[in-house]
Length: 184
Image 1 (cartoon, rainbow, N blue to C red):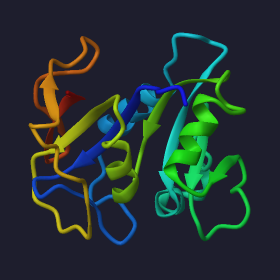
Image 2 (cartoon, rainbow, N blue to C red):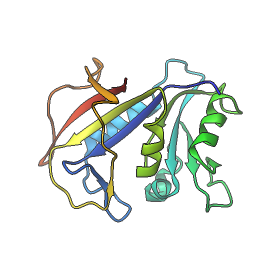
Image 3 (tube, one colour):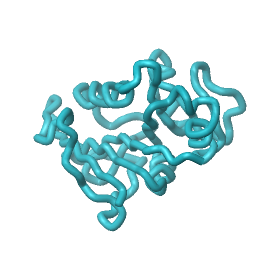
């Protein structure tokens, strides 16, 4: 299988929390705009980026926004029998990566973004080529879903690309920062 660069994109608060009851615990319009820009922008106008997510993440996206527009949507599930409308269904992470790297989608996908949940993030972070785009929400929120630890033995914080702000951002009463980590 051809190894593709994986991009994990996540917003997590101080305790690594990423969700509560199947929803985001905050509303950050600026971060959602950054998410959309990052996951849709391609260098080749004839290609799209893929977003890979678990079944619960798919279900958490409001129906009017599913599938995520201008992206190849891939849902991982062992319990769903049929592909969701506008998305591809695979049984596991390896199968999704084969579909993108060597399968039917290899010629149409430029970049791969992992958008949740916890177990899908964990799988992606084991991949040889992995970059993490972390929106660090500098607040405490009650959460029931958490992002895995970014070990400094495995990942190195890198300078933000020039298009990604490297100063604290404010959205309402919430402060957050963008951080980028590359696998060593």
